[in-house]
Image (cartoon, rainbow, N blue to C red; front, side, top):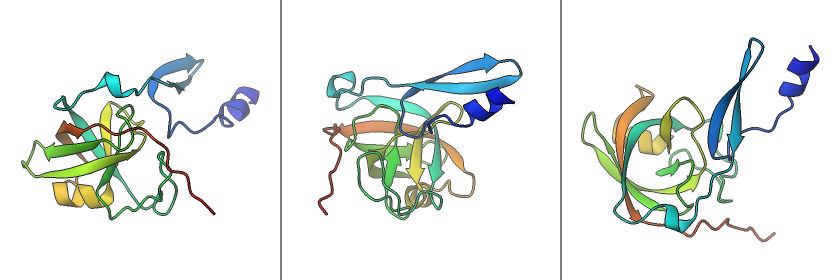
Length: 152
């Protein structure tokens, strides 16, 4: 019972980077550790492929990893390690629809997904109802990774 209590008090992994599974008895828990997201890890023209999902209502109006307010109707995305502010072309490989969007958040942390698009991006890419899609990500411009500070 104590193990369950302490494991439920762990920090949310939403803005961490890489992960691995840890098995404790019958419980399996993900461990998230930071990975460098320096500009040098990627270069313009790099192409990544994998599974994308989308996120929306539960995060709408909350701060993203780069400090801006998340707009589920916008065309942005979360990636685990691309520098924040990176501009990419995302192509849905199932229907060839593509859009240009900006990485402003960290994630996804579910399964083997490589991108978490905003709800608006998922609509434009044609996979909102399916929930996931096979995508190609082409890096157009690397971001500076800077967190946006808000002045009150």
